[in-house]
Length: 590
Image (tube, rainbow, N blue to C red; front, side, top):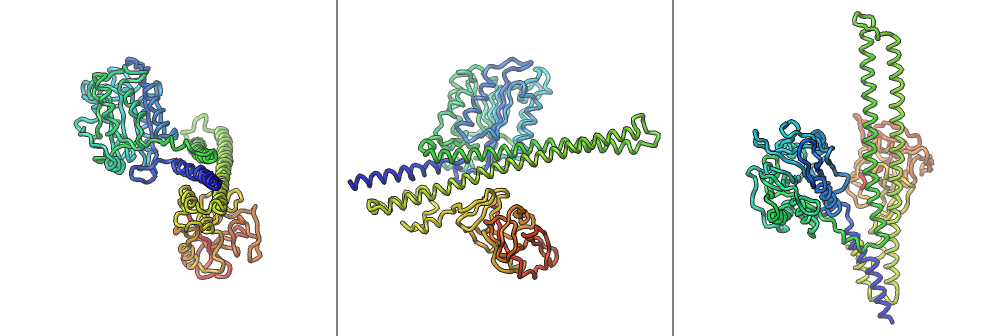
């Protein structure tokens, strides 16, 4: 009977901790690079597909090819819709294509990667002998709307679109013109080759053919080239896939089914490094299968927060664009008023140049100024609501995390405290560590130290969150504060030294706050009486022993400080203020 109970407890442990731990560790918003660290950059995707040309023969599969590739990449690999551009048929004009490339040049960061897929007509100019993309409005004899391969390559230069890796996939006629003698032998793909490929920058292209026309006929609604490209991407099981490993399968399939010969190579003269390659990061879908309902819920919360924060940024940008437009209209009106004022009373004055005309302009300016002010007010209100919702969700997620850890510790304690669990202490401990590796250096069975190893949420007021490691996180500003000041009067130099040498929470990057950061803590709606008997307007989660805190700004022999019973910003001698002034360390939060 005892043995049966032991087995039941062991099974419970592995169900509660082991399987859940392995899967939770796999639920990462960002993939892991071949070098072992988390990928910091984003994966951008631009897909272009044109079937319904105005003056060129219509194609049958180009738009479907582009959309299916988009779906495969966003579902199986780490491409997300926040970094996706799509241009199909009537939208794929020369202007839109070039503007999209310019937007990518402005948005893509040096740590990002970009894949561009073009499925449409291509043309080889009979005069310049140069290949071109053919936008939807292009004429067959008029090259003015064509986009030459040279123009495309200019955008792919490391000085234009600054991505670490760029892969161009072109399913069009005469696409091999991108290389012109810059194709080499493919390496034998090993883990070392993939690691090197990721570390070095790259500018590569895969084309459906060389300098010959390519077939639009294919399989199941896709061109021959896209059919085999999509099949290779769908069949891949490796976490990291590079073009050198993908390409041979694609080339063999196309060559056996069409009179065209795909090409892979580095683009010449655009700044890529020899050996560098684009890396496809496969999503580990199977890692999610064993998640408990609670873990799935936490993952959904993380994804919801990510979406909300992304939407908040986009909404803010849209609102700011509308405000900028109104500001430009006001500036133009000012210029008109100034011009009219200059003409009044001179021979240059016209019939419309009168006091009544000027009054009409002034009234128009008043109206537009009110509209601008209302836009600004609405923007501030919407931003406040968005940030309040995001903060609320973060607080709720932190509360659930703390509760889950506390429940797991309690479960562990109950197991080892049972007379039937005495001989399972080590195995239970190891199972616990599989889920919580931050406790790896704690001696087996040391539950007291175990509790101290976790930075658990112990209190919150909705905006500020106090943790068990003596820190307080402000979700509004993402600043982390010490839970209290230094406790006694101090001059500015010693306060600065105290902050920089502070090691609360195990962090080493504490500093003295600015006066603006201190003012950001002040809240007239919150009050508590501190050790000096003053009413302090500040969250109770941060304890001040007196009324004022030193700030980092200095002028000559004076330094700034902030008073928390009045909200005043003042200055004092750096060597003075030893009785009332305190030091409160701050650092950037997570």
